[in-house]
Image (tube, rainbow, N blue to C red):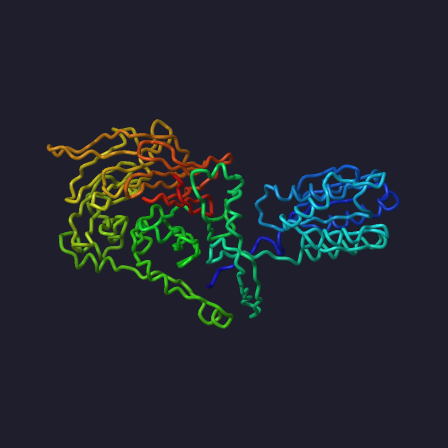
Length: 609
């Protein structure tokens, strides 16, 4: 399967986090000045892509700096090193590894250790110099996969141990007969580091099955390819802890839900990257759809289709078993079973010949669909610039709501309901007589019975299948300014975000049957409501088809309730994840399967009752 490759384009080489460890035990007294001189030349060769942490060790380990690009700070601390004491070699490497593993910098760069020593791990009486045993260090080296580039100085160095440390870690061991050789070795190491580049791609196979995966990396300008392979992680890896943008989530946090896999369409996320704000699961549970890029996956986390890596303009997403739709018509309708036709590119010749460009799902021609429909509406608007475009579909796929924006009419927006089963238009109408850009519709949701909820300028209109407004919640009267919502399949309940008295709430509302007088329902109290923190824009919300599960995802993490207001499952993040005007996504269906996103990654799981 063809994949886009991301590279770190900010620098000519990969960014790096380097722990520089220098042995200052008593045996270094005669050569310390030359060692520090060689180390200073190494530091001067670093650039803005390198962050260095300086560590000195003898009988104890003494971190002299945190990770920094400040060369003056590094050189000043380097000059403070004095020789004396024993050799706590294993402890120094352990501290360096742990510092790299907990490094909060999310720069995606290389993590490595550059180590200089002239001896072996021992104290003054010849016993171990470290609290850490070699066996413990070996386990940490194997699990961390952080390379150690070791330099052994002089004739008394323990070459076997240094060679093992470097080999286990994936680094390399160097040996210098005297201090004069150090500068050349340091130069070779930094030259090698500065020749490395990082490339990332997102696999089309999200299974945690431990299988060997083959990757063909094609360099277009060189017209060359390199075949690589790696072992996929195993299922036990995800059952440990998850690090979600600096929030360490362990098994106790995941209790009540089984997180099966996660996926990300763009490796470099964060403030400058994409946030996934729209996710959905088809009602039958077969497909997971990321509306930010129009990517479709199966329940195993395997990507079946990808329309674009570019972010799409989406606010709400609606899906049935065979249809999907974006708010304001920026997406298209399509039959998800066409995803089986996606190209599978297996070799270099095919990639060069058949690389897919601008792939789109097959779409429904809704102007032609409306033209052929029974019922009356403004057909002439199909020819205007802001013609009828889809804004919602019901979860059973029967009803489609479309909106048009004629410039010379009483209402800023007109809506119509299309019945796919009867191929007719039951109604067309304006909702609120509002003018100006603020009147643009927000969330629009239609139930399986054709009852439609429309947010416009923070007000909610509920329109039944005949086109009659049965629900009319104006924020000036209710005090509630709605932003996002979702409706159950029966159309008698919805969940929504609303601002109330300068705070944001998530609420669940039951819609009473209309009374015989035909009066509009103009006030609703939530069955329950809870605080939510939307940041600049509220995250997504979801209600299952049967109304049993209600979910929202603000910057403090996902939460799933039942219809009585009981919290079933949640993640509470210590460090809030800012959504930057997009919001984090969430979606839940009848059987308790759910997806939620945090920043540029989303997670697929099942509620455990």
